[in-house]
Length: 463
Ligand SMILES: [Mn+2]
Image (cartoon, rainbow, N blue to C red; front, side):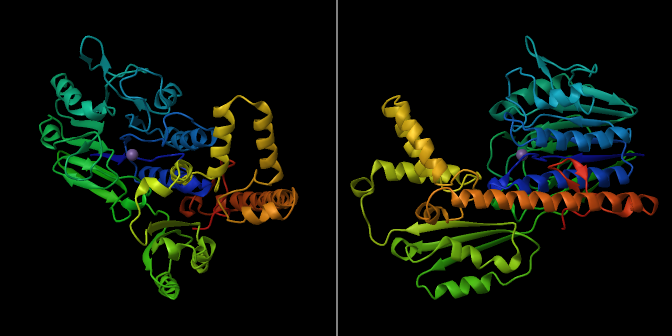
């Protein structure tokens, strides 16, 4: 019997809502999936694309996360086969991707066809190739090709040869039509037609099985719209017959509340809606109100309604409607539109409310290269104590009036104290880990502090 794990859409390095903790959630989910797979004694592991969230701008922490987990698999002697997703590589451009890098480190096999007067489907030679053979298993891999998926698949399938008396797998980062509206989807018949036993897909963040086509979904929740989706990874047994089981990996709790505020007392109902149980969740509040009502509602107060949940973060999305009809162009200045758009763009980052600064900076550069203006601008930022601040706390306005610099120093001291406390926690965790090793290390959940890239023995993060 052959047993393997089929994982997809890990999205390492995704600092969702600008949260470092969320990026750690994604890494922890990857670790959990891999550990479960290894404990289930799999013969090999498939990763069907989007190991990383961003194809460029790799950071050391994200790369460490990938390497730490993959090293674990390598140590266990289990081979990993992967394809590049839309988040992993620039499609069609023959560039050296981060998966190529991991392949060079012998942490995985990165399967993709080559193009040279048509498609070239060769066996993996230790550096490159489109398919790889194990005892009784052949695995073909195809990376993401966006709107070209169907055409590449057509060409690819003509070059495929079955391994006789073996398990034949085709792995691709592509979706099939009818599940979600995203690019890179093809009709499912195109995959059914392939002369293989198992089609391993990634791309659609929701789990589904359609005949031999299997898509596990993403390990964590990449977008609030994906909340209701079933997700996990497949543990597959094959002995002439296929048996695939979706293994669900614990993920971060999400609390999503939509509420309409017509009068101030409606806020009490919002409180009621939030009186539920959840574990350090991401809280997502959709608030609908009129423009005149919006003036009475303080975002910080809204956020405080969720404080009893000890949330990881609270996100408030305003859906503000105009009280009466007003033509769009007459009294909304170009600048305010620009500010609005910038604010939306910046929402997913950790900079707080800096859209005004961005506009000022842009103006300082675009009107002339007046370095004096740029200097003044930077000075004003520094004195406002704005640097070093995290998510838009709404406290910035008051800092400004408070006078120069003081708030900045206070923040920095807090940071240092936090660091000290952490150091103590780590050293404690280190001790308990050694003690525990003799007992049953197997049954303890391995919790990593990914910022420092080592096992904390379950102490640093409580889930
Ligand atoms: Mn994805």
